[in-house]
Image (cartoon, rainbow, N blue to C red; front, side):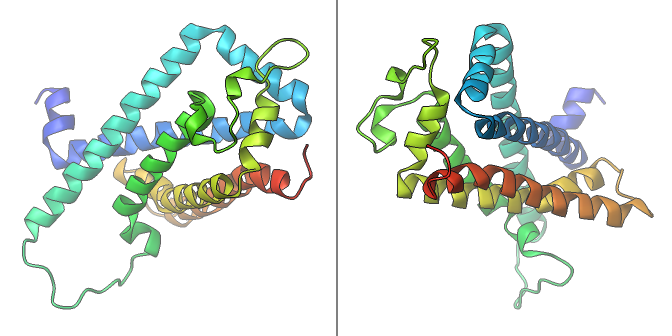
Length: 230
């Protein structure tokens, strides 16, 4: 069978595709967190990092297009596999049981859709910088530092001083990490790598990485709200 036909037409191929795109998105989330944490190094560091990214448009837009493709494929395969599972069992059980499954695994589709809404808002807020969604009355495009570069540091501080924005960010990131706590372990299983003695290790890796990510991402808005960064 043609490899593309296998990936897009068979359940096993869709599971592989979902796992591979999930791994790519997980890698992006880790790299993005590391970049964002330069916020704690001060205005000059985070602004220099942002300026570097925007100074290489080929790299930036290549990454953005790649991410959009991966997100689209990940969502599509999730919906397709969910529909196939329901079709294979058209008559539901009289009593649903959650034996052997975690809350994260049972809510993967729901949390994924909510995360999608959060990501769209986050892009409009800090990437596209639509003034109407930041609730500050300011246009983030107007923020510049002493080097006449976009002042990303001040944008983050100003943005996270809005309580509802910060609350939505914390909830969105929390759901993302809940999603990853199961998804990271599951993707290794889909790729046939979670076998034998490695099973507990890979499960632990997914669990602890989700905590590392939630702490890393939450640390920025919480530090702003507590007045630790101005």
